[in-house]
Length: 253
Image (cartoon, rainbow, N blue to C red; front, side, top):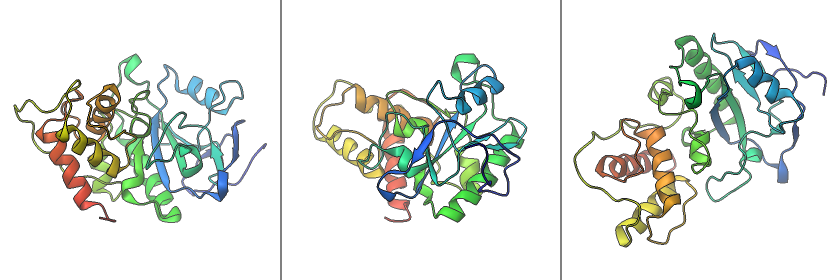
C-alpha cells in the first residue's frame, strides 16, 4: 500500500505502514486503544511503526505539537495491541483503532503530555468515536488490555480531561484512605468479588478467589487509568469504590 485516503479530516500526513491485515470475522472497530510510543526519539518510533521489521503498526500517531499522522486505514487491522484481552476476547487488534501518542515513556523520564498534543488526541478521539460509534467505556489504555506487559499511556495521561470533553468513561476517583485493602497472597470471597467486578468491567482476570500476581497487575492497570494517585496493586477502599461507581455509571448498566 503506497498511499490511501485519510479517514479523519484531522490527519495532517499519511505515512503508510507495512504491517496490517484484514479484520477477522468481519469485525468492525469498537474499541479506541491509546498508547504512548515509549522510545527516546519520536522519529525513531514512527520509523518503527511504519517499517516491516518490527511487525508492529498503528492507525494514528499524535505528535507532541498536535500534528496527526495516519499509518493504517481504519478498515484494516493494525498490529498494536499484542498479547491482550478485553471482555473475554483476545483479538483486540480486530476490534480496535490504535492511537500512538508521542511520549518517551517511563524508561526515558516520562514527561507530561503537552496541551497541544492532548487537544489533538481529544479532537481525534471525538471524531473516531462519533464516526465509529465507540462507546465511552471502550476508550481504553494499552495497559487495560495488557496489564501484565504494558503501563502506557500511564498515570500522567489526563483521562479526566478527555472525559470532560466527552471522550471515555470516568468518575472522580474516591479519596485515598488508610485502610489495609486486599493484597497479593490473600484468598477468599472478597477477592473473588473483586475479580468479578474487574471482569464485569472488561479486564482479563480469572475469578478464583486468590489474589495472585495477575490480579495485582490488573488492579495496578485499573489504578493507572482510573485512580492514579497511588498505583500499588492493592485493592483499597478508594480503588474498589471507584470501580463500583464506574460499573454503576456505565452507559449500558
